[in-house]
Length: 478
Image 1 (spheres, one colour):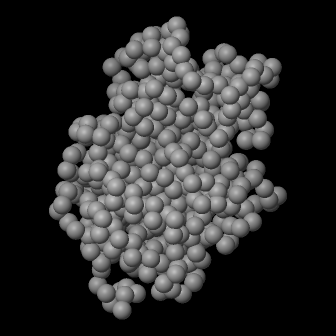
Image 2: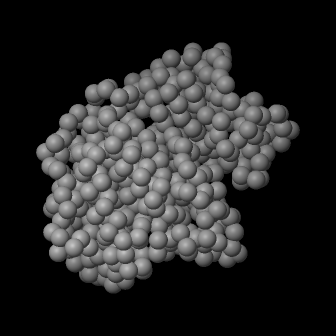
Image 3: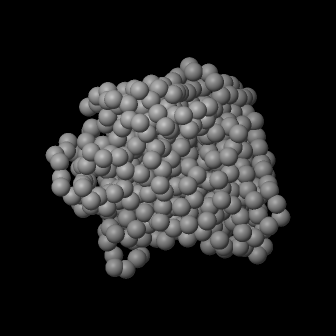
C-alpha cells in the first residue's frame, strides 16, 4: 500500500544538491506501532534489490524492534512522495526488513529515506537520502552497463568499489557473484545462525570491505547477490554436506539480501530478472549440487539439480531478450582444472550445452572463483562466450601466480581462454563489466596489481558465434 504525501523539505534539499547528477515481504508484516521504535536507529543498509521496471525492495536493519517504512520519490520530482507499507522488525529475523517500493516508473532515478517510528533517520554512514534507478523496459534500446564482483575477504579494503562508482558509464546495477567472504560460517564456534549473520553484517558494512561497499555503491545502485561455497557455509560445500545447516544459511541470506522471487529452502535461491533487452539467470550452484568427488562422468551427477536445470532451459526458451546472461559462481570453462567447478560435472555440462543450443542463442556466461585478474573466452573453450571475474580483494599471493588446480597451484590450472587470463603479481583488486548496446555486448575485466593496471576485453555481436562442444576427446561423450 502507498499514498502520496506532502513533500518533505529534505527531498527538495536533496534534489537541489544533486541537480544534474546522473547519478508482501517474508521478513516484515503489516505493522502496529511499537514504543521501542522511539529509540531504534538503522544499523545496516541501505541495499536495494529485486529491482524491476515498477518495483524494488530496500533492505535495512534496526537496533531494536521498530515500525519502519520508506518515503520515496522521483529524484527530479520531489513533490511526488510515496510511502511504502509499514514493516515491523523483530529479533526473530535479526531486526532486518525489506521494505517494498511499488508503483515505480521505468528507467527513473528515485530518492528514498528511512522512517523509523514515524521519524526520518539517516543511513549508518550518515546519508539522509539514498537513491537508485529503476529498470529499463524491454525495447528501450539505449545502451547500459553492469558491474560484477566476486571472491572477497571482509577484512580487506575493496578499492574496486570506488573505481566502479567513478566509471563514466555508471553501471545500472552491481552483481555480487559469490564468496563474500571466505570465513566458512558452518565451521565457526559456537555453531549457529549468528555466524552467518555476523558474516553478512561484516560484508555489508562492519569490516573494511563492507565500509567501502557502503561508501561507494550501496546508496546509489541496486545489487543482485548469490552465494558460493565459502559464504554458503563451508569449503567445497554441497547438498549432503549442508544437511545440518542449510536451513539457517538460507534464512540468514534471505534476511540480509533483498532477492527477487526464489524457490527458497530447501529448493534453492536461483532467480531470473530482466533489464532492458537482456535477461539474467542467477544460478545457485551450492545448495542443490552433488559432491564433486563423485565419479567424473557419473551420468546422474548434478551441480544444478533437476528442478533448477529444467527452470534454466525453460527460462532461456521463453526469453525474447536480445542477450541471455547466465551467472555462474564457478568457472563454466571445462579446461579450468578446479575440482569443484563444471569440469567435475562433465555429463551434466554437456547436456546443458546441448539443451541451451536447442532452444536459444546469444548466451553469455559470467563466472568467478579462479582468483585471478580476470579471463575471457569467446566460446572456443567454454562453449559460450565467458567472462571470468577478477577476485575483488583477496590478500593471498601465489608464487608463481596461478590458479587452484585440483588441490595444487599452477598456471596450467587456469585453463585455456581465447582472450587470455591475467595472473596477478602481488596484492590485486579487480572487477568486471559488460556493456550492452543493442546487438553488441562488450565483456571487460579490470584489475590492478603490483605491476600496474590490466584489462581484457571482447566485443560480441548477436548471431556472430554459435556455441559448440569442445573436442569430444575432452568430454564424457562416447
